[in-house]
Figure: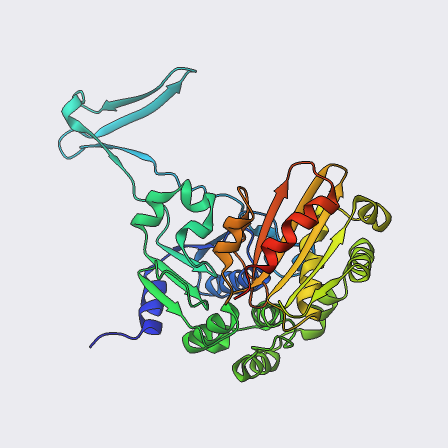
Length: 384
């Protein structure tokens, strides 16, 4: 009788000692919090666990337990294994010496001399038994983690957890549930089925943060009853909800808030095309004390507070002679077509925000008003 997906995962966990948890490049809070929860759970099962993300966690997530042990690269290279046949000649002494150009290993037998035919060479298996991927649609979304370690991902069993409909099912086991709002919900359900008594306050807090961030604190229009039910279960298990709210929603920087205010003052709305956008000059950034790193958070604030529009865009000049466009487009709209029409260099980010895909584009020096006049027809013409 074929095992269920959950049972297959449980059996793989039981058989594995060294487990690697990998995240997309620039992971969302949902994926990152889920990875930290999974690490804590696997440590209770006495597994050797590593969590790898391309970059450090956001400052407002550093309060989560385990955020300080995140790695930003893999150290999973194979070792060359030198095997000596000692069935006939017993090993008496082993030593080595190294120089800049070479390394030498010296083997002495007790009664006879070792011959070349007594020595063989192999390459060990990768020091990883199992890979968990959280929140990635494809292996390519892992970025350099995959590109620089393709053999590892090819040879090692992979468990793929995600909630997006366009997931490529790249794992040996794929737990993909598009009826939930977050990876954290999928993982919470899985861990509860495995051994719920192992879910302590730290694990529950990480999982609750994943759900809260993915649903925009349950304000996302597509938030399902499942999210509320799972969140209540985690709170019952000791999840520290107020701690999450304090660090995630009460830590917006003053420059970000100032830039958000200036963008609202310059907001332009095209109701017929369902397009809303704002233009920010270098003077706006200077007066707000903000920088390019604040553009995506400002766009996220727009998405949270403006509903029913197909495109939400920011055209900005964070520094003199440097123009950037960051644009949110409904996942039902022609995302790739718009990116192509914006010209070379337009990049679709891996992680959407609340049902919007994000496109980034940088431009060579050009007057901001001229750039606005040139881009606006392109943006408006993409709405079907």
